[in-house]
Amino acid sequence: MASVTAQHHVVYLAHGVGNREDLPIPAHDAFIGAALALIVSFVVLGLAWRTSRFHGDDSGRPLPRWLADIIDSPVTHAVLVTFALLFASWLTLAAFFGKDTLVNPVFGSVYVLLWVGLVPAALVFGPIYRLCNPLRWLHRGICALARIDYRNGLYEYPRRVGLWPAALTLFAFAWLELVDANLSTSLSTILLWFGFLAVFLVAGAMVFGDVWFARADPFEVYSSLVARLSPFGRRTDGVLVIRNPLENLDGMSPLPGLVGTVSVLLGSTAFDAFHGSAKWLSWSQKYTDHLVLVNNLGLIGFCLAVLLSLSLASIATAGLGSLPRRDLPAQFAHSIVPIVVGYVVAHYLSFFVSQGLQTLVELGDPFTRGWTAMTWVSDQFNVYAIYEHPTGLAVTKVVAVVIGHVLGVISAHDRAVRLLPRRHAIVGQLPMLVLMVAYTLTGLWLLFLP
Image (cartoon, rainbow, N blue to C red; front, side, top):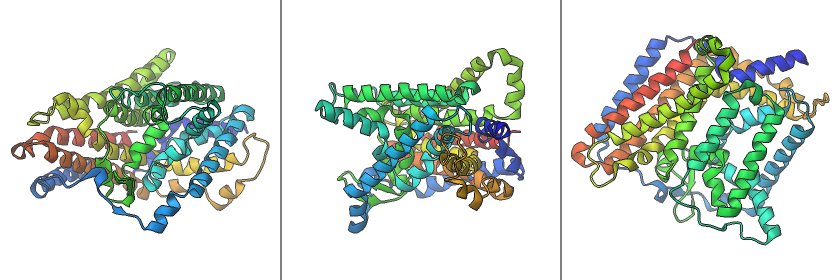
């Protein structure tokens, strides 16, 4: 058991670190190709895409009635919610009564299935976490007992606060995961963190109503942002539709705090990749006695770098007439979401597949008693087989980064031609293009960093 625990310790702390060895393609070719892809995309868009083509939440083709009825059926919702609550209960039992070792399924469920798994789940099913969020249902239960309308709290939620609570809770999760290895691999710390989060969210919902979850729950907000790249959504009239994912993305509200939220998501993912590199490990070992402080500064620095660069590039966009420049970063923040998704795929693909399968095995033995309820997973699948295809992984990761940035360029371009006077439509976008190229090269550099 000691060897297994040690192996998991390395894997969970490394996350995507082991991925660099499966990139057997020349780095300079990837850099040049990615930069050219963005520049060519920008030129083509400038010539052929002169007016805004996206209509946000007003767009979409209705799903077949029978399919929409199934999706919106109370039975479907009840099944999904029951499964989510049972899963949450199972993990709670594992957290309280399981052993504090890294083969406890709590670690894999939190860091792999929940955090990384939110991305493919949201891309395929839309904002499904909102429906299954256990804390929403806990809040509803408390309100039912107290005979309080769960939709409305004591006070109206201040619009100017926007998504800033989510930016803070997302940063808190990134801090838990990345800053101190002793805390991130401690079962009691995870229990304490989620306990504080539950109190914070449920108490806030009692004050502001259930809109608080959509503004403060890190996992629900993350899922909802990524779900904007799903082909499924609802029109403004509530009808379930299928549409161009970029139309879906265009419907994202430019709420206060949106820039901070996407900055934390992109910055923490980039820092996760960087702080697992040999270069960072070698440098940080000089400050072993202050490693937590160094990691803190690194995480904050990466998030602030994204926040400042996105804000400055947006504000530098010229000729927007009467729209205040302070409002521009939120107008373009939606274009960062495809980049976040591309980074997640690039940095966590191998980790998610291998450790996701391993976590399914661990879920069958939550108390480490030698139960074999889920060992059929390891019998049917080699959980580390994905590492046997380095070239395929390399191509997938580079393509994910490039596609994410190309989609970001398209989203930013459509928003710019909507806001910019026509005579400034191309020149005014140059700061955002420079930013996208810089993000692309940085993302690839992190992939190839030894």
